[in-house]
Amino acid sequence: MAQGAQSERAMARSDSPSRIANSPARYPFALLLTAVALGFALLGYRYQFHDVEVPLFLLAIALTAWYAGPRPTVLALALSIVLFDYFFTEPRFTLYVRSSDVPYLVIFICFASLVAWFSAVRRRVETALVRARDDLQAEVAERTKQACSI
Image (tube, rainbow, N blue to C red):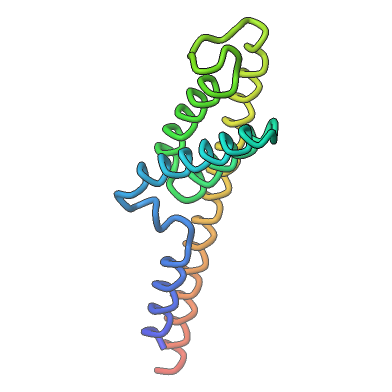
């Protein structure tokens, strides 16, 4: 019975979103998600779908925070800010920001940071819940074993 609980715990840990958080693929994952967001945003811009870049970059940041952890999220956040400024604020294709675009960029930075923070908190809470469940299952298995041996 204890062996079954151990295999269930191993399965639960492999199914948790934090499995990439311990992988060396965390930073390439952040880069890939940001590049995909940029690709879709540029594609949307080309076909006259305006203002899709913000949700796409926010999604990339949220997924990075959820699956890869805090440090890759900082990379995705910084890269998204630079790409957003370079490709989607006037003058386009420069890192120069006009004073009229500063509020737009600041709002993007604040909202992206907030999304990253919420995702990180949710990930931390889920990890704590999985750990608590695993500890509870181990305790139940131990008590069941003790009760059967009495």
